[in-house]
Image (cartoon, rainbow, N blue to C red):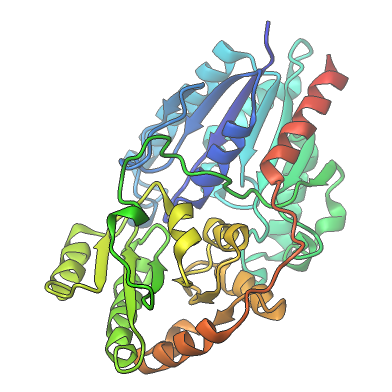
Length: 391
C-alpha cells in the first residue's frame, strides 16, 4: 500500500496558507494525499486531481466570539470531521500548517486527534508542523505563549519544517524561545511556485493585451484583497499614480484585486477606471507567473507567495506591506536590506510618492539573489526520508 499523507490547513484573511499547502501537495508523487481544508471557499482555484479534499465547516473568525454557541457548534463539527478523517485515512504523515505558532483558537479541534496519536501504541503517524518564514510580529509572542507553543510542539509533534532560507530569514529572530523546542527542525528553503496552476490556455493572459514597443507594463497585485487590509486605498493610490506617470512615461497598468475583495469595492474600482484604456482591472488570475514574466515592475503587498513570485521571476518590485499583515512589514524590510525591492510604508503611500518611486524603480537593475526557492521539492525529500526511517 502506498504511504498516506494527511494535510491540515486553515486560511483566514489571506490565501497564503492555502497556496503554500497546495504547492507542497503538488510536489508529492507516489503517495495517497488527503487534505483537510478549514478556510474560506476559494471559487477561483481548481483543486489538484491527485488529492482527496475534505472541506471543514467555516466561520467568520473576525465577527464571532469564541464564547458563542454557534462557534462551539462549528468547532465540534470540525473536530468530528478531522478525527473521523484521520481514523479513515490512518496516515503515515500528518502535516499541520501553522498551529501551534498561531490559530490557537482552533486547539479544541486539533487536540483530540493529537491525543489519539500520542497515546496509541499501534499508530505510527509522524506529526509535522509546517511553518512559513515569519510566524507573527515579535511583539505578538508573549513569553507565556512561546512556552505554551514549545510545550505543544515537544509533546505532540515529531518535526518542524520551516519553509524559509536561514540565510534570508531565521525564525529565531521572531520566536525568541526557539531554544525550548526539542523536536527536529528543518529549514526547507522557500516554497515557490514554478508554474501556473492553469494548465490550459485559460484565464486572462498577457497575450490578450496589445503592447507598443515603448509601453511599460506595471503589474499591481493585492494578494487576497481582503478589505480589512486597506486594499481599496492601496489600489486607488496606484490608479491615481498613473496620472502623474502619463506626463512622461507610456505605461499600461494591469491590476489584480484579489480573491477576497468585496464586490462593492471591486465594482467601485472598475467603475473608477472605466474608459481608461491603459488600466486593466481583474479580480484574479491563475497565471500570475506569466504576468510577472512580462512585467517591467511589480507593485504589491509583501505576502509570502507574492514575494516568492517576485524572486522566481527576478522582477523589479515595490512593496507596500499591509499593516494588518503581521509578517509583511518584516519581510519587506528584509527585501530592502538585500536590495531586492524598494518599500513604501502604507501610511505614507500617496499617488505622488508612488509615481516617483515607479520611475526610480524602472531605472534600477534587477538584483539576483541566492535565496533557496526549492522548498516544496526539499519538503518532499524530507518526507520521503522520514517515511523510510519509520517503515
